[in-house]
Length: 99
Image (cartoon, rainbow, N blue to C red; front, top):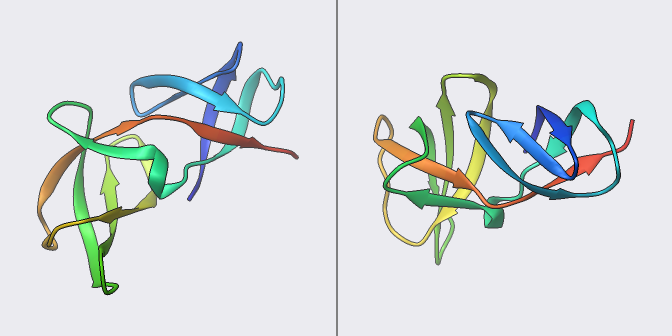
């Protein structure tokens, strides 16, 4: 998922979190690619609500929405999830996109 973010010294700020990113030496506003593998479900973190759920064989692909982000995020879960369920996410990294 591509989201707007702010980057300074190789660290991005998004959804009240700061985390390491790769992809260049951009400082200031940017576009940031968040891979599902770099998003973790945690006890604390960005509060969001599951918007869609699709079973994909060995995992459940979900999209979530929450405050401070106008774009739905996609992530993969190894267990069943339900539309409307609330969860907390922690971002473990991202990639700054050029342009």
